[in-house]
Length: 175
Image (tube, rainbow, N blue to C red):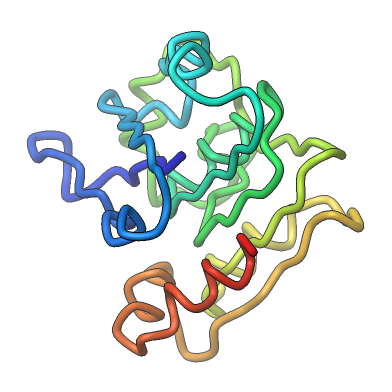
């Protein structure tokens, strides 16, 4: 499963950051077109359209948040999330980057990240202050691994792709 990020604003179609993975994996792309951090996503619809056996999830930013949340609702073996926010809820986070999106969410089913004990997680963050802030809120669990990319901001997947490391990291984790 590949969950999209917010893209370039609400008037643009969200890009699929991980489209090249279709060369190796059978991928179901999920767009959160209301940019709701999974609060308006129909999880039942996703479940009806995916395999019940082997399932991995991936996403960047909001898509990383969505991949992690979905892993608590369905049997997902592995999740790789690039720069997921721990929360954008105004009462939970001090980061105001996505406040304009947060203010449009009326029903907060998922105000912050939750993790399954049955899923292996690889969370990749940049090393700037905002990234470190969100990473610091992640619970310490054996099945959650956090990695920082040096000299990187929120655009971790983009930087790794430019360095020709993105697909190596993904393939090694999904092995």
